[in-house]
Length: 112
Image 1 (cartoon, rainbow, N blue to C red):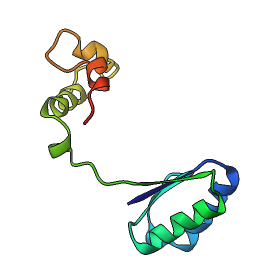
Image 2 (image 1 turned 135 degrees about the vertical axis):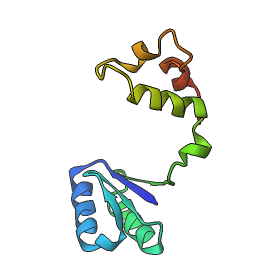
Image 3 (image 1 turned 180 degrees about the horizontal axis):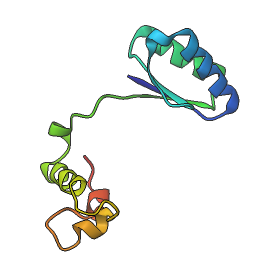
């Protein structure tokens, strides 16, 4: 997929027009950004936006996250444990303190 992010009102307006006129190519819309299909049409539309608004449009290639391959098991287990916690208002750092669960600072330093 192609992620198109806009940084100005005029670029957002152009993106809005692209989304309306080419709905079949839009995977998801987020206001000032959109995911377009990774097709020639998607690339054409994204590049057209950047050509029109060179400094105000960023284009990135994205791919879905396969959590079972890319995310370590200890992180997935921490997510499951945290989401089934007894008190919904407990922040993760307090929840994980004194357990074998990974702490926030350690996870922030490790890349996937």
